[in-house]
Image 1 (cartoon, rainbow, N blue to C red):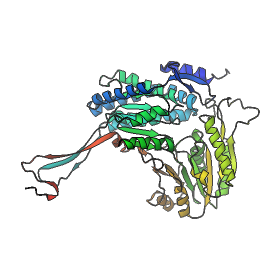
Image 2: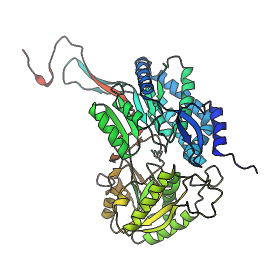
Image 3: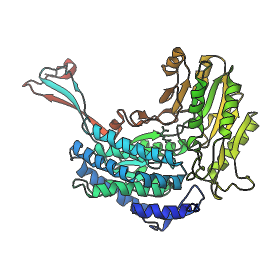
Image 4: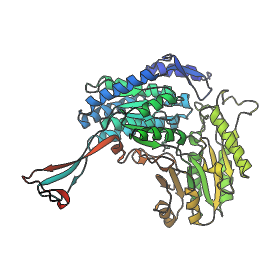
Length: 510
Ligand code: UN1
């Protein structure tokens, strides 16, 4: 068998097929999470370049907002067709740049396709209400109009899908987009952008500048967030980043939509179907090498079964194959970079210092001899399980790495309280066969998260639902349901078709 291509050779092939230049620099090196090699040079936007992209987005918005919404939907329908054609190439690039295993990378591209289909449907139902007027001869109604340029700030871990959730909805809503991707995933952004722009180039009503892209560091994101022409800033990433963006946007009374950290818990009750629970836990905790916002980070297990559940998980985790995600059978790829592995080390050290027991997992840098399936330069870690006596500070923080903290509980109220006792509020789940427990977890005094599941894990949401969470997660909702409303402005219209001028609330003004 031929030796596999190096990530660099592999990327050269994929980028050529996608028509993305490998040396658009000077600027930033785009690296592979698999071996740290430089895959391409990406041009970094400076202040003037960013200004030009925002100005073009503003000009594009003025033209795009009057294109009929179903026609805007047609543009998105065609983008969805193009994504279907490029699905494999784009998924391979995601694997190379951020290290996802192929099936998860393909799943990410599928989210873009699904969102296109969803957005096409929405393009024919961006409807408001008609409301009974208290005045005779009057009609009270609402309309939804395009909002303005939308800035989308995305993280490395979903380098295509999260932009797509925002951008495809923004397009049907009549908005233009300025995308600031993660510095760790610029190539995926360039490739996704190119697929979409090729479609728009053949779409007569699509103005230039409709989909803008600014690759750069935090200063670029800050510039976009501060610009009063940007009507909505939709940001996904750390709580620290979100807090900074939210303050800048609030300072100019702009709109922000935040999807920040999660510290997601799953409760396993004594009645749970344990085979199903273990499968749900393993994907949610170890999948994507623990780098989803929705990754399962805390397991809250009834004390009567906690030791058995831990033992089963340790034995399954020991069989997870960790390595170059392009190799067959690999289930856990690398962390994004060495800093992420150091953060995992530090968290495990802190957990030990708190008296918790690290049952398995950790940084694999000391593997001797080096495993050939794990190229040097990648940040290789084994998903960890930590048995906790209580939820100390480290347990209540989000470490963006595969660490599963396990706590026991005695009564159900205590389990719910433990699940909620973190600053974040993205997703939660319960595994139980007791309908009362399931309903209590979903009820007003149950989980306080934005996404709450029964008999499944915390990750892997479908695009049809609204995605996002409460507390430090930021409160935003993206993707399905009525999330489109964030990308539009509502006008309330009262029309008087009588020859009288009655005032509301019965006011008499002579
Ligand atoms: C994210 O991690 O920012 O629910 C998004 C999921 C995916 C999206 C995650 N559909 O896990």
